[in-house]
Length: 241
Image (cartoon, rainbow, N blue to C red; front, side, top):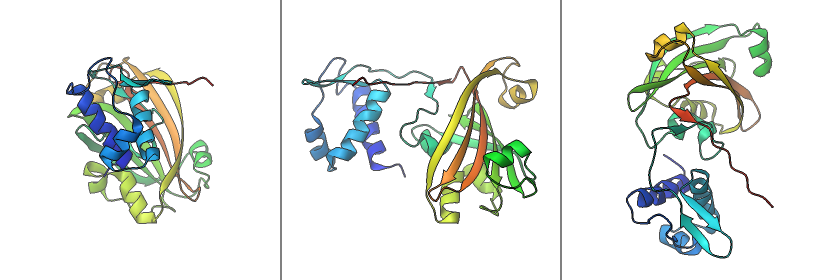
């Protein structure tokens, strides 16, 4: 289940898309919205910040919040650094149908570079997992994961095919996932990867590599996502002092 501020953000976004709030219209104040949704101002501010990040509203100092976008596009924001983006693919894209196709799951030994990322010895085992991730039944990325088997000893294939891996890991370890650092690079799809997605070799990709840690600082997952550049966009925001 999504966090409350995500639910509120989605509710207000739906109101905008359904023309309850029109382009250029001032929406209710944070105080009014917090009363409407029965939450604190802090929670409501998180929701509004996400709507600003997604371009649906603009905050004008001394005047209020105004609608700046009333349509969606067919691109998905990649690793935006907001919401639940670091908590896994299934949680980040919770407003569309997300599914997975497991290609490979095996115990193996990590390369020295991956062992360094996971802060472990190279002679210790990892789960190597390759999955194709789909949004609304369309293959959009190939994801490779190396998960420290000393932290998560067993991972059921049914979780990899139909469930949320990160929810399973939080339940298994009894710890929350709290830290994620990533690097985004441009690249081209190889024949092997393009065949998995049903696209032409040489198409542009957004390659995202990252390390994920539990709340106690334990590194457990190093992943590389090979994302279709025609399906994802990157958005950054900056607010001056």
